Amino acid sequence: MTIYPRRKSILRNIAFFLAILGPGIITGSVDNDAGGITTYSVAGAIYGYKLLWTLIPSFVVLVIIQEMNARMGIVTGKGLADLIRENAGVKITFFIFIGLLLADIGNTTTEFAGVAGSMEVFNVSKYISVPIVAFLVWILVVKGNYHFAERIFLIFSVSLLMYVVSALMGKPDWGEIGQSIIRPKMDFDEKSLAVVIGIIGTTIAPWMQFYMQSSVIEKGLKINHYKFTLLDIIVGCLATVVVAFFIIVACASTLHVKGVTINQARDAAMALEPLAGALSSHVFAFGLFIASIFSATILPLATAFYVCEAFGFEAGINRKWKEAPEFYFLYTGIMLLGAFIILIPGTPLISITLWSQIINGLLLPIVLVCMILLVNNKKIMGDHINKPITNLIGWTTVAILTGLSVTLLVLLLVG
Image 1 (cartoon, helix red, strand yellow):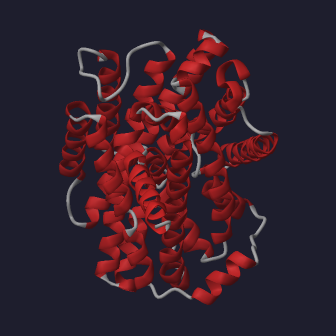
Image 2: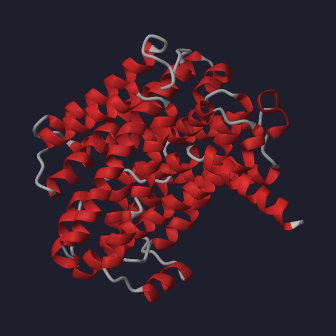
Image 3: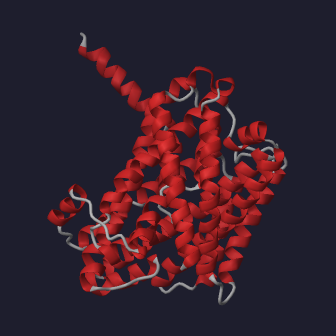
C-alpha cells in the first residue's frame, strides 16, 4: 500500500519534468555550435586527449551561470536585458547591446559558414545549402510558435549525440583518456594556452545569458518549477560536455595519431574519411550541419529577444508579426545579413570570427557582473538572492572568465 503512492509520485514528477524540459538543454546544446565544434576539433587534432580535463571546469561554469539566469527569470518574470535597462540606464544599455548585436551578426555568419562547409562534404554547393537553410529556419520561427519550435530544438539537441558514433569509430584509447582526466597536463606556451582558453571560453557567451532567461519566461515557468528547471539545466550542461568530449576524442584518436592538422570543423570531417571511413566522416559532417542550423536559429532569435527587451519593444515567437514587428524585422535582418555575407565570394571568415570573439570577450565580463549584481538585489529577487557560497563561486567564476577573456584578447591581438 505504501509503494503505490510513492511510485505514482515518482511518475508524476517525471511527467512534470518532461513537460518543462527545454530551456536548459537547448541553451547548453547551442553552445556546441560551428565555432565550438571547430575549437574541440582543433584541440583533439593538436593535443590528442591531453586537454579533456578542461571540460570539467567548463561544466561547472555553465551550470552556475545558467542557474542564476533561470532563477532570475522565474522570480522576476523579466528578461536580463529588461533588468539591465531598468537598473543601469539607457546609455549603458545602448553601448552594451550595440556591441552584442555586432558580435552576434558575426557569430550568425559563422554558423552559416558551418552549414556551407558541412554540406560541401556531401558535394552540395553553399549557394544551394545556405539559402534553403536560411529560409526554412526563418519559416520555423516566424510561422511557428514557441512550443513547436522548442520540440524541433530538442530534436536538434539529441541529434548532436551522433558525435558519440563518430568517436567510437576511431577506436579511442580509453586508458589514455582516463589518465588525461585523472592527471591533468598542459603545455604553457602561447598556442596551448589559446586552445585551453578557447575550450573554456566557448562554453559561455554573452548571448546565452539573455536567451536562457528569455526562454524560461517564454515557457511560463514559476518558482515551484525551480527544482525541475535546475535538473533541466544540469542535464543540458552534461549533454553539452558529453558532445564536446566525444568531438575531442574523435579527432584525437584519428587526426592526432596520424599528425593531421586542421583549421576548422569541415577540415576534420574531410580528414576523417581516409582514417576512420566514409561513415565516420559523414556522421561528423552531419553533426556539424545540425549544430550549425540549430545555432543559426537560436543566435538571431536570442539577439532579437534581448535587443527588443532592452529597448522596451514586444518580443517573442508566440506573438504575431503585427504584435512584435521590431522583433521580427530584427530577427529577419540578422538572418539575411549572416546568410548573405557567406555567399559573397572571398568573404574574410577568419576576420569575422576573430572580431566577433574579441567583442564577445570584451562584453562577457560586463554582462556577468551586471547579472550577479542583479541576482543579489533584494528589491528585484526578494528572498531568492544568491547564497554566500553561490556568490563566492559566482564571483570566482567572473574573475577567472575575465582573466581568460583578457588573455584571449591579448593573444588574438598580438597574434
